[in-house]
Length: 166
Length: 409
Image 1 (spheres, one colour):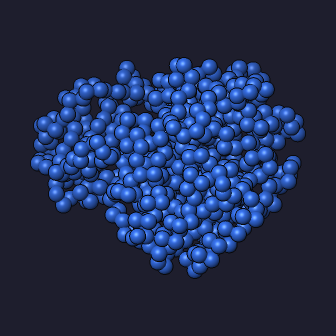
Image 2 (cartoon, rainbow over the protein chains, first blue to last red):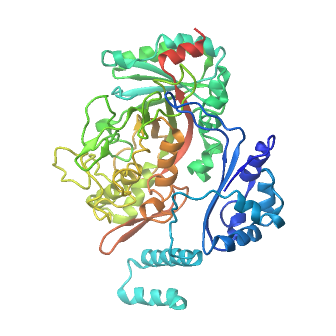
Image 3 (spheres, rainbow over the protein chains, first blue to last red):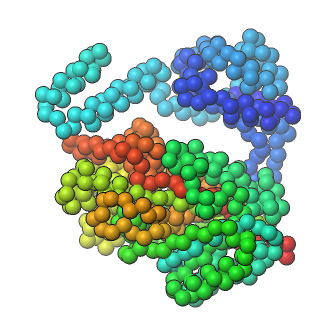
């Protein structure tokens, strides 16, 4: 989705986004079914050189993209509930933000139809992806830790570490 | 920049302007031009930091954000954390606020010394720090590997050597000049974003880094994994680097005449050259699939040089000396080219199906594992990094007409 940034609030918006915690502390972490998301500020249009015509933006734009599990309708609800106050902190700098309690229609109104859609794991839910990554790391750790051991020791370690997974 | 000079030694001189425009004017009459390069035995070049450009009165918005922010601001993203964080950097190497880096390079010792002395005199009190660098025997770096072998072939400039450009179905093609020089068409078919005339052409961006190499630590790591067997140590080191010590490719017979004409597509599981080997990460060629569509926009021209005296052969106890590599690369976009190589390919393994495994040689600031594919695979782990960042800056290298414009002449 794309929304124009309110004039005079560009720096405050940038500061807000830069201050968002990353990793497991990210506010996006709390959004159910969310695989990947990002906010991008488009401050101006790139100019290469001639013969590209010069063009300019009247206003800066805030772009939000995400990939998620389930339907769009359900996701909008999950997004607003999961982001909580962060939704207001970010989008209040955009035109017409009605506050998160009334933001469903606003989000859908600013949605841009996707021309090319790429999802890293289109057939797996977020929890399945995370489970697979955790299992991979666990298996690699086992392989590293036991690489010099005898077959019996490897089997014993495997059963100990993976007993709860089977 | 695009051809290389074949320098045997360099001096990187760090400058804080008293009178920037006047110095630009002086340097405009001295910097090397490609036209006369073969005739010269020592040359001088100048590159400007974001702070230096602002001091010279340019408009901040015309230049890329990463240049104007400077490398220190990007340090955490670059993986320069822990023992590589900016607070630990060498204060004499591109200290914060450095306006320019003047590089003197020489093929001939006497000519180099003379030009370096003249340049120091010219800079006077504006010279606030200096770093020496010189080639080691056999073009090796301190870990003992031949370096600088794979450089991009560029359209219209010099021979199109197999293995240097972009792999195609039929062979190799050179990269568009706009990947490295502003004002020319790039791989996307347009000219790269650039500042206003005349700073918009025949210019480039430069990444300068001082990378300390823990040679004794690297040798102890090899000993810890392979014991005293030197052949095995050499094989493990080659797997980590992705080439043999003499620079020959792990994918080719060491006697093959063209040691750079190889692709990774024939070794998809990394059985010969590991998926996480340094050269496979930093120049993946066709390793990411889709031909070279995912790698051709992230190429860099490297012009680095070792610094410090070599640690005597076989020594595994650190002598406390400062040694490593002055890493220099050129590209049309530091963010798209250099920073992608550093952050996405060297510091992380996701692009190569390796999860978070970093480049064992370069990436990360702590313990790290490397997977050596095989049947069965083998895992090796370093306890701490072999390479630490000791300083660096992002720079803009103007053309001669750009220099004159900055001088106000």
